[in-house]
Length: 112
Length: 113
Image (cartoon, rainbow over all chains, first blue to last red; front, side):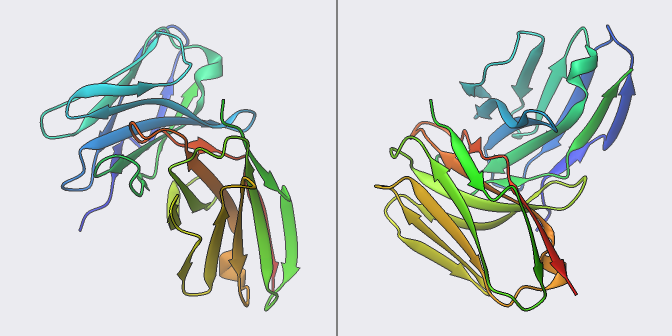
């Protein structure tokens, strides 16, 4: 059974640019959550999608957005990148509510 | 607002030692608690999930307990091995609606051979 796949694994972008990250869940998982991990703030929740609808949202600015497709794959987009957006972005997938979360390997974003 | 704290922040032990990692949360109205390990630069690997109605879960050398009334969970690792060296994170699910996890800062574990 394939795990959670995140692409790309590494990205280098320039301030002001935008970026799109992708997450393909484990087959049968309809919930996809996104997290930002930095040394200073640890792991912080960005948002969660379930059946193509955003179900939860964290405290991040509107520059961070996401969507989910009918096959449950999800993308997150960050516009007008700032240096502080440099982080490891992780997605987690699950089958429903309050079920075990399975994480991908993450996308390491560096903003220069 | 749910806050999760992990103690100690770092731990170094000799191989073979039994050890306990602690996790506390401020709001006892959680729906589950999950323990993860993270190797440097990698994603999170799920270790154990304890539902709010459960008191403990076991997997191999790992045992996790949950005491909602006191807002605490512990992860017990028996007979530690160098391969156990990693960062251990606990996360609570504070809402019945969805899969939002609130994480602690983690405990960095080093097992010396």
